[in-house]
Image (cartoon, rainbow, N blue to C red; front, side, top):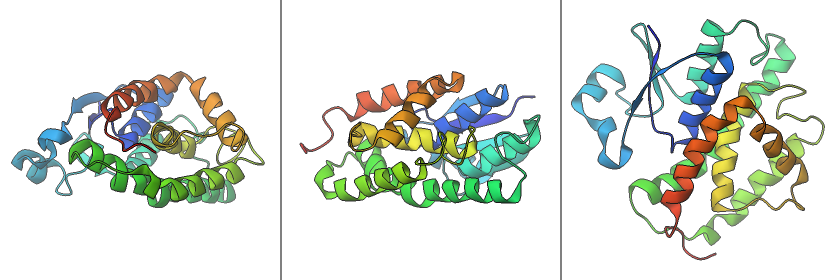
Amino acid sequence: MAPTLYMSEISPSCRAVLMAARTLGLTLKVKRINLAKNEQLTPHFLKQINPQHTIPTLVDNGFVIWDSHAIIAFLVGKYGNDDELYSQDITERALIEQRLHFDSSVVNNFTRTILNPMLYEHFNINLDDHKVSIHKTYALMEKFLRSFPWIAGKKVTVADLSLIPSITSLNVLVPIDKEEYPNLTNWIERAESLPCYVENQNGLNQLRDLLQGRCCPC
């Protein structure tokens, strides 16, 4: 039986899991959760699936795991044919995990503080209040990509699959200047050529449509 993913394409973290599954050639049974209708707070979801009521949440043969980074690592470990996406080399893996933690602690913070309030609480967010922090994030990504084409080295890893949806979603809010951030721009363009990128593009289009008119002029 295929693993079940509780998700919403609008969520960058959910798109990361979808990209990983497609890269692995893994078919997931998708159950969409409407966060605007608080479907993640139903008694069934809270008691039987995820008491933390977050998405993405994966159920695989009775095993339940949430947090996109944990889900992707689990999927690669169980369904991957090799360690291309998540190297077993201790040095390479350390770099991948540093980038994953950067996504979790720094980039995803903007999802929590900007995107979610705009999308689900209908707040009007003045992006001027966040531009400096977002540009600092872009500048760090620019430096990460100074030596290698991908975020953790010469090949695509789970770190790229996690960060691509996060950064491209930020790009909807605060566009990335090609002249100021050429490495970051080139990384996104390389990502767009990946077969799995379609999983990001679908949700990104939905996000862009939903955000129209919800940002204060910048």
